[in-house]
Image (tube, rainbow, N blue to C red; front, side):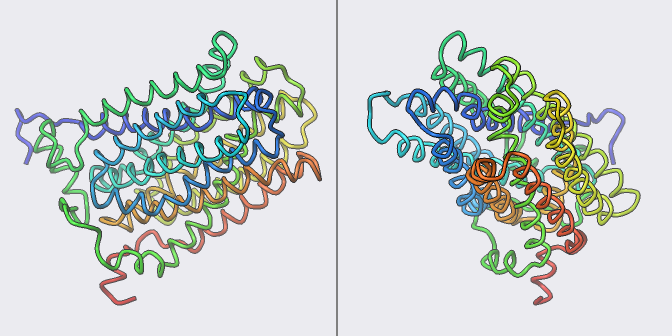
Length: 435
């Protein structure tokens, strides 16, 4: 019982805020190349198709190491793993700007560096989900995940203006060095303020700890050992995890059109100059930021009032269908301004569903939340790798409208996959029953 003089701390929300910062930094580091891509391609004589290979290399490395990264987080904890990851991706972001223009085989260098950058960034969101499963009560997980993924919008929204400014004044290479430095500082701060569990944090009051642990159905224990031995069979035998992973594949395909190609689409297809393209490119990230937080709030509110099937699954189903409608309408708009706004509404609608993916995996996976969410996120990144390479091919052969229509179709399929997800049945309970 909380006495009148006992202070209730809010350390969990300070750490959620810093995960928002790290989320923003990770997206600054990964989308800066979509802004600097045209300059890089001109300097090294890369076609758009070869530039697409460079984009895909990052997403492929990011995708392939999601599940191993999640396992590592479950074993070592998010504090150390995320700190090491931030240092790793800072180094490879800087390396992107080091290649001399006279060297042969530049595309192979960029593919390798971006692949390894993706490997480093793969631990970002499995780490946040492990943190959420340990630090955040179930009734607050929608908002916590919404805030963390609002960093996607913040980072991707900052990138066009920041990178364009730096490019115009100091050259495209300086934008990578700046991004690297920001990331290294943010990672050091995380190591200093974070702990793997609330029990380990000296600033967490007994009242806050009681709130966190008292609201959890199965309180998490500090684990120094590896994940449970049946972790992989548990994940791979779950219909809900396969459904949410397939849905996240669709989500990732749609999202990466905005992260990889939207700036180039506005400048090359819609005919906007660099400054105008940078300005309009900030609209989708702003919509993503708003959609992430709003989706988290709606997620928690519906889950409390109507249950998790409505809050997690119903919201995601509706959001992905709404995103598909905006993609179809925006791709057919004649005006660049109208197209930018309507397509951005599609991005915002898509991210209304973001908290559902991560909240439901934290809810049902518990101690193996890192590995489970890593497996799920692998689906999204495989979708992103596909769109990074396939989008210019479709656009070249059938037009850019067709590229957006394909994305809309996948968004619909991703929405219906949520109908197969059971948010109320934990993976550990399922294993205990031998199912």
